Image 1 (cartoon, helix red, strand yellow):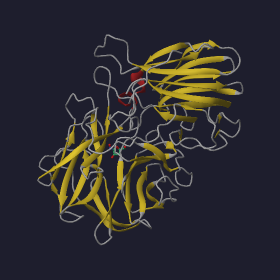
Image 2 (cartoon, helix red, strand yellow):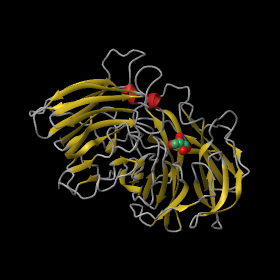
Image 3 (cartoon, helix red, strand yellow):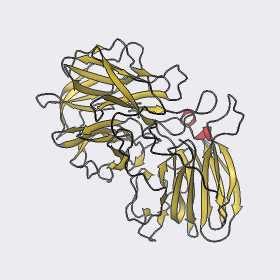
Image 4 (cartoon, rainbow, N blue to C red):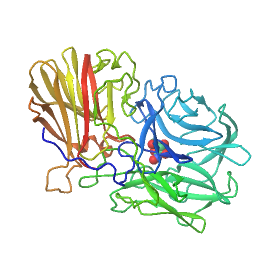
Length: 504
Ligand code: 6LW
């Protein structure tokens, strides 16, 4: 394959954490910043990032990486883990989060090192609903505020709640889904930051302030303080935010947004991503600066962290933290120990349509990219898939000396192309690229080509498919595309996996 130009990942660009990384919650401890996101039906759950400059974020682990912490049995797509709040208090990291799976609920985990290990869950059955927040007042009382927006007192070390939830704020007139509350003591006020308008094109961020953590709260006269509703801004659905101070103590906001592509109504395929915007204060209210794809120069030194190697050779016993599986990842079904230097997946179901498919992938983080993997399918069937959920995925699957491209869109499932390949390991490849010009109102956001590589590295596309069917606007839900390896029969071995960004 010819060499491809690589984008410079050290530029000051938004999103600061691209790909399906929604509901960011951030906290600062001295010179270090930590940020956690939602993870839904994927295991391990709650990716955790570290930064020293708010722009370059390195994933240092996953908060929920043991089955005792995270049971996703029976979880539907976009069920599971919603909207964590990450805080540092009294020398410990505290994370409160919701498992929306039946039998789940709200729970707290704690750690002294954010890279882990995190504790087993401390369940808080008295906390209703979703989007829990933790805030401590001056006398050490901890308040848990949830979507709605209501609040109750909690002992975070036991999960015990006191009293019944008190309604704090409806989010203002006409705003549906008041959610994602975060409560902060800033100067003389307690500020209640929320999202409102729903997590789609109407999304926004509003704020209110009061003299106590329990209100009464006075809404900001300029609410919503952030929204891109009814604009043609390239970043849409902006909302679900958290506030943080930069190294120079200036204020910043992390929030989720999407980058729709194609004609009308626009399709976003990477899920909800984490963005950064500057905040100033006017008359005791935060004012959110312009959201730009090229961030302004920062008044503090940049500290780029380690960047993940594009190739994973599967030479280590533990998988990188960016690898995620659907629902669970039992060692007997996903291991690098069986054939050293290879990842072995052992099938449990018979297709990617099943919610407990054995699939290990990474988020698609760039609007154009290429993924490749060397597969030995002599003992089974499996391959390389672009997955939005169990009903929306494209894959190229090898089985002995046959490869085929399968497309699943809603209730339709089609074998799009089939071809014989020589016996032995084969390189399967997927390229996501801009749709062909000219663009019209009906043009999709991108095209997904699936094929095999010849011995000289030439890419032979078996099929090129419209990317809109693997978008949130078609599939629904809260996640984004994940590209990865899977097994649908027997054992399938993967020697390496490459992911190359071809654009931002
Ligand atoms: C989350 C809610 C939201 O619980 O979407 O955009 C939900 N905001 O706050 C799922 O991520």
